[in-house]
Length: 373
Image 1 (cartoon, rainbow, N blue to C red):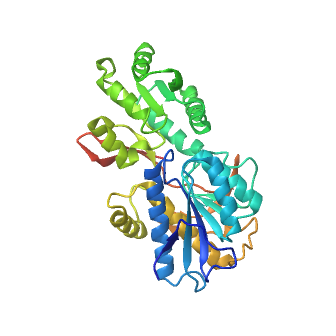
Image 2 (tube, rainbow, N blue to C red; image 1 turned 90 degrees about the vertical axis):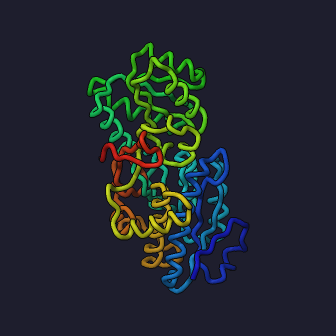
């Protein structure tokens, strides 16, 4: 069997043609990070194809019903409503944290299982829910590891170029500040809403910052800020960082070239992939015509987990609060199990592997592992 994917309206829940439907939430158009969405979808599609080639679920082929969220929380919530009406067995995916939060709230209200692939915001739901689980490590976990990397590199005067209107960026800044302050490090916020790339450089000089972290959107204003800092002779020794992972994707390298190298970011891969990860990585490279990002592996693992759950629990949403606790799936980045974690309202994989990585200045197409959490 081959993977089946549709992005068009489908018949009602009783006209499934014997397929097991999984609803996929993916940012495929702007203002969503469409490059990340493409990788996420490629991973999910590959897993669906492999599940179907192995006989499907209880002899029924899996059909991925894709909806483009375009980084719009309202659009995502409406998609969840629609997919629930179509009778999907479960929901999968989403990259943007604020969008995933809207999808999770609607899935919880409707009683539809939702496995979030990539969003990291700690407060993915306002209250504990048995319906939602997450593969990506919580922001507080990954960004503390990033803060440890900064401390180990000797940084004590750190600036963040930030759009504080975003809950995701504001939470990230707070995590960094709370973790760095006890070690004698100071964090200065530069609100990009009232700044130009040139004024960001002036602030960095005035505050004697040794590191600038980009807590802003890509391509803009991130690209303009990086270019200005790289060309400012006063800032020749400063480290530019992007904990959210913008440099992971080829669009970053295409936009910035050599200026985009040596910008450390978070990536959720182990130092060495096992046999499954290697095989999936090869297949994803062929599918994407480029090196797969960690987001593509997250997409694959999401469908693999859901397929195992549906095999063991059936297709009629016979979910209980313990359903996620029963998961033990060999994923591309290690064995996946879920548990309840303090201050996180969803079932959580504790934890996906975390690395701090950058692009090698000598070969920007090659990634270097700088720190492992």
